[in-house]
Image (tube, rainbow, N blue to C red):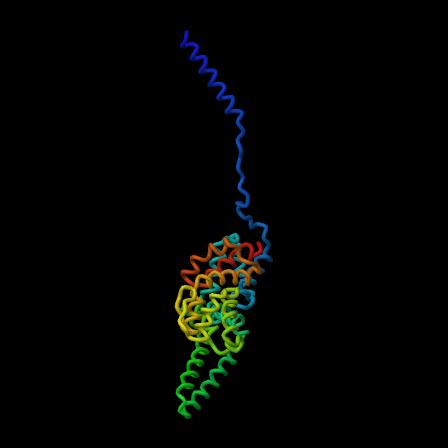
Length: 308
């Protein structure tokens, strides 16, 4: 009898559990913002506008009719997939095939980065003007040699070399012999930049503003001033520097420089500040390869830039 009672109790408990399980409400968790983009409604005109914007921002010119039609066709065939956008962006930045008017896409892209950098650091100084400075220094070198003034000879030769470094930075960047850091360094280390930002106080503040998008702290300024004004070795951004050459190199090799360039190119291309997440995503790779192309490709292949 006890066994029958136990079985009956077990049966009742089992039924209760089944009823309770059946009455339990199942909650579906929906994660928003995780929808697969639908590009079927993107018009041909929007795609063509995207192509034109890429050409203008990367090469400094509009696409020809042939280029516009070709790029648009490829994007439509790939249904605007990221891989297609990345391939086309890479083509415009790195392709060295000869093209009438540009020499090559890589040549035009290097010229574009060079022009942007001169506008940023040297108020857009034209190459003929820089060449004139070089010519004037050549004359000064000759006169100093005739006068036996060896100190000025070496001073003028050094100033002349810095101007050549500016002119040659475009070719070095195009051939991937130097990267964007080196171009920025030579843009700050010449007599034109010194003339724009006269005296050490203005020079230091200009370097921080151009490279780091901020003013120096008092400690940073004091260390920088000791280097620039007095040639006293000091640590700046975890590097030792004792003169202007070493100081410029220390700035462009800092992690702060790499972070600020991400922020600067986001603002130039999207007209907004980069978020912390966007900077964090790009910083590790950019800090390793120092390629400004890494940032640019990330921005111009996104839906926000394309306006899809």
